[in-house]
Picture 1 (spheres, one colour):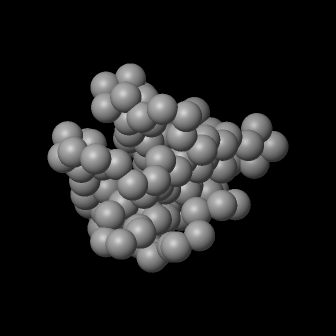
Picture 2 (picture 1 turned 135 degrees about the vertical axis):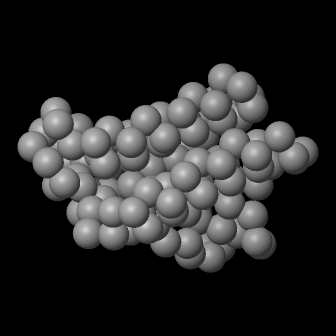
Length: 113
């Protein structure tokens, strides 16, 4: 199962973590895993290349399925559209495939890992 957690601070999304493999199908044939990976990669690229987030705390662990990105509190509104679109897309995916993906939200004051 894939678990995606969005981190909030002061009511704003400040990062995410995704852990696990959905297990909906064999590796290379898992459409749930492919959808999660695509959405999170779009979020990562959008935050860095479109929004212009500088030096986010970014972690990918090659030994296990883990992705984490924390960008902290940002100014403006443009980034929210991107983040909310991905968050709502993942929640929709989780409602369609509840055995394979869970999306949660936690308030976090300490963003260090």
